[in-house]
Length: 286
Image (cartoon, rainbow, N blue to C red; front, side, top):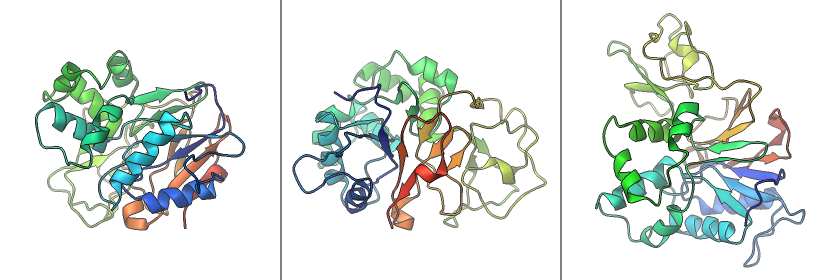
């Protein structure tokens, strides 16, 4: 089994079916990948922040590899919003792609978040009240999954917070585009910060265009934010599809999702027990 006391952990960002990039990153991190067992010569372990599937060409191969690593005790993983939606569809009776069906039982054994000795792992946001609410629930429980499907239920809101982040409505008269040129009605917030009296241009993660320095989200819009104090453990996340120029380390928060589908780069972080994350520990495929 994965030892939760292990402080030599290599964290891997959103893979989204890009098996080739995953192998490249593992090799760059020093893992042997030419046999049936993938391992590190210094007995380092792996941790995945979720979103193994969709978008890329080899989701099934990624699932096979991550599942195998977890079962061998070489890795641990949390669910991403893509896997959680797959589970919700299965429980609600919606069609599940044939290639994913054999992995459903294993996916439902994974946690929504992990608290290890010296770090935390969650897909999108370590939202304290949501974490507290979800602590006693497991994804293998159909009744819990059904609760998350009820619109505006506490469990629906909590899973959305930690798997999709905290969002704010963009005023209808404000036309903002994401990095792909898509107009957005909501923006993902820098959930770990106190954003009171901050303009929209400083609130979003990742940024939108055009820059809006003189419009502000209202206090009610920011009500659900729970800033992440600097004395807390480092927390590792994915989800945000960050462009190359956006810093991936912000205080105690490390986002290792560099949008592998668009930028063809998979990101990781070599963690060695440090209390304060360091950008020098970020590793990327080229």
